[in-house]
Amino acid sequence: FITNRILNRRQMVVDIIHPGKANLSKADLKEKLATMYRTTADVIMPFGFKTDFGGGRSTGFALVYDNVDCMKKIEPKYRLARFLPKKDKTSGRRQRKELKNRKKKVSGKKKT
Image (cartoon, rainbow, N blue to C red; front, side, top):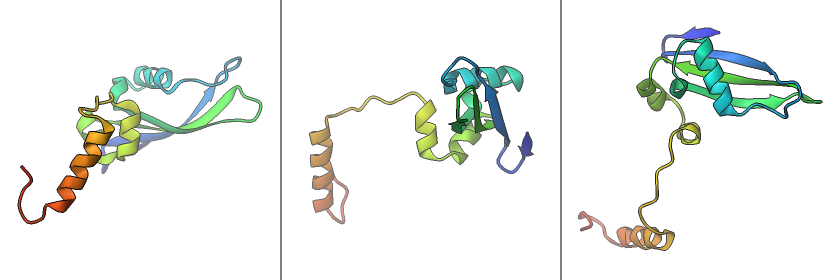
């Protein structure tokens, strides 16, 4: 692996051999990498995995951050959304759209 001190992380190409299985889940991969690099699974970001033709082997990329705060600051939002717990939507879709359109009509002062 390569240590990237500027971004507070270790980055590596990961080769997985999984005979008999279609592929390995990212959650299982995070747990395995956490034990290998003596860290917790919540600071590991695996992505970009491709299964080789014929199966049995996959190659991808993984980032192991020093802490969760560094990860949240640096990682793109779409990648964070894959692994962080999902937030429940507070209101319905129609209600959110109506609020958005009401906010567009008001300019200059804060919407109450």
